Image 1: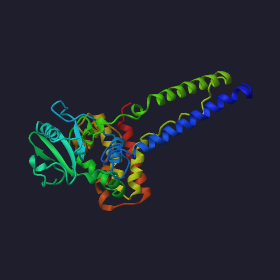
Image 2 (image 1 turned 135 degrees about the vertical axis):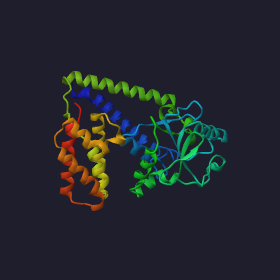
Image 3 (image 1 turned 180 degrees about the horizontal axis):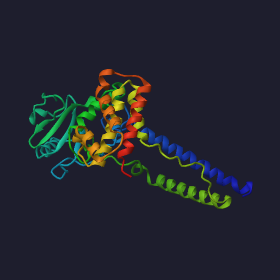
Image 4 (image 1 turned 180 degrees about the vertical axis):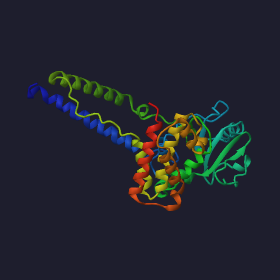
Length: 334
């Protein structure tokens, strides 16, 4: 390709890159312009950190834009963070409560000026020891909307743990964050909001980009990979979570998360329920004829006594996690 012919192609490529950067900038601003209490809002009054934390910890979370009624699955845990009265009528709220009464499970975080819950339950009956409030055949976890906002998650290192406790007392297939009650069912996507002429420009730029890639690839031979595949470290995300706990001086939670992962692996190997595995682990381990029985007993004893010691010795923590890794390798199914 001579310099005379390459000039226009380079100019088009530069324009395409600038346009993509503008779109990325606009998309980044979208999170700050979303309504309060939604999982899409990254502002202090948004609930994006609550959703992202649960998703990163492995919970099966999803989003719904449909009102909760008799057609809604009873197997899912519905989450409603505040209510925008402009989009949720009293009839909508009655349908929601009827669904709970018929056997649904609801996490409801209310504002001070929300619908009067005393119409359905004793709204002053706060949770004691994370027991949900019964309503008909279903249950309601009644909390304050401030508990799950981004501002609270950023300022209180225990906020995430407390919310996980509220979630774990329920049994469900999926955890559904319902955005119908924030009016998002009326909002269009960014693409739908674009003028028709602007969409034509986007399509044209995409075509130009494809032609450029094809043309340059044809002129200069096959593409050469500029990256290498890196094998993920085993338990990479688990280690990251443990490091986060240790970074805020919550050593017990770091070790406990590691140990709970080992117990779940044992459940799969021995075909034992999670609630029973810790009690009968030594027995089934010995029955299976696995090695390192003494190491297993030692690890269990140290885990039980760990909170009382409040150990912050890095060497001791590494030794304990290393021992758990040895035991996990023995019960991991290939």
